[in-house]
Image (cartoon, rainbow, N blue to C red):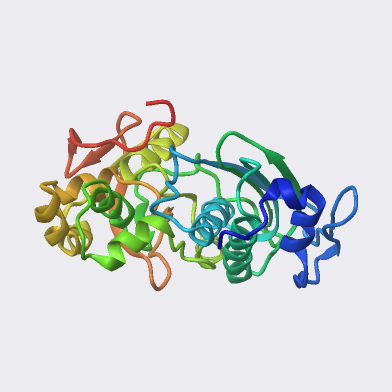
Length: 316
């Protein structure tokens, strides 16, 4: 691998040519990479837009994650934001910064991971930028299609609704603890920290089933439901019994690292499960984990304030 050309040696446009070559775009892309801007058809007439960044040392470590892993994670966390609005991703724009001595193959592997994950959402990567940076920075903007439906916002919850989730909780946080404490085994949990698995397609399913509020679990279940509670002016009461399966799945890992699995289930982020409020029964595959009630705009656990981990803080 010592003969691999670096990004400096190849130059910006040669690296870009490498990462965009032979990529197949969906039919909604009228103009893809290679011009001054991409052109995307918008059948709905509206576009949902979200942006997230991954910064080396803060959101990933190169001695834990491969470039392919990082690419998949960057796309997944952005796709989950569109899912949480009840839409589906239609295109991604990527900005990538890295030291100039980074092997060019790492940029290609990053791109491969992004395209693999983007394909799961039915969208393509239509453009972006490449710059020299002291460390890796990956910025992704996703465009989404609402399919003619109203967006499912955070401010629609009201008393009497049930709170339901689709996807797993606490796995990424458990995996992080295992990596951080250098504890072997638990291969699947360690993997789930590196590459989240959002429940693609379920945002649309929830919207069509009448979800009145929804978000993805990126900062932690209590933290993200707190956004819904404050936006809607209601209280959310979670049930530990309804979350027992998530807790039990993490018991052995908790014993291995000396942690309480409830902190992972209720406070751990980056699983990118979807959590939503419904006035009736949620659709198949969703499980009820609580209810919306009258009260101050906060989240309770079995009727009491949660005193454990409350989730991710960007500037902590």
